[in-house]
Amino acid sequence: MPRVEHLLRATAQAEARHFWFRGFRAFVAPLLRYATRGRSDARLLDCGCGTGANLELLSRFGRASGFDLSEVGLQFGRKDGRTRLARGSVAAAPFRSAAFDVVTSFDVIYSLEDTDERAAIAEMFRLLKPGGFAIVNVAAMEILRGDHSVLSREIRRYSRSDLRARLSAAGFDVIRITYTNATLFLPIAAVRGLQRLRGLKAEGETQHEITVPPRAINALLSIAMALESLWLRRFNEPFGSSLLCLARRPDHAAIAITDI
Image (cartoon, rainbow, N blue to C red; front, side, top):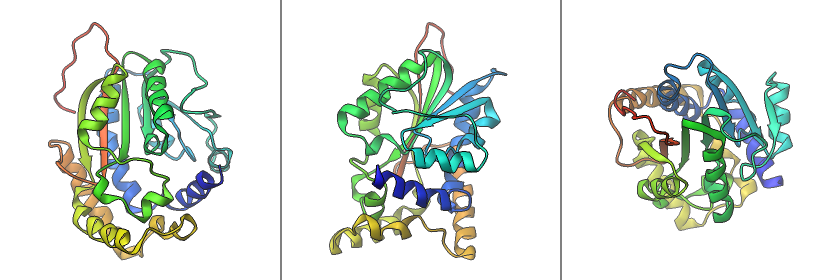
């Protein structure tokens, strides 16, 4: 667990202000709105919640809980006043079946070995009520592997077809899947290409990857992410450093896939 705890400590310092996290929340919010529409008492679960910081976003759409295997992450969350946190593995979630309307997995499964990754996806399916939704965010495009991959313990980066196939194999209907962070694709690709050429750093040297930039730069990049989130309300993106997916556990009812 020490490597996970290193990442969680770095994340806890950045997630409130870093432009990437601001953009991520703006990308995810419309999917949460779609997944919970028509439900006044939706139950949401963040699988592999880390510090639980995303529960603030999820709580805008219903009753949100989270769980994580790292006690360090949970301690950070509890210190910040988050109480609906539990300890457990995403490959064996400590909750009953068909208990949630929405489950989320944000930048978790790419760090799991294949067996655990399949188990984690199967657990999300098990936890959902029929007709419930999963929202999954993962690292994308192998060409973007770099120092950040070391910090976040990436085992794989996904393509659109790869993520779709893995979710479909577990029984999900994939409703929408898009790349995100396309706005920053070119500078990210250039920097990470150079990082691979000189050799990726050791984990202890990678915390700068998640450090909040100087205020003016962070504000500018936050605006860029906000503008991209507006584009994503209407269109999918053909490339980007992350993949964001909305999937559904089937039931017998039909579903409209417009206005997501």
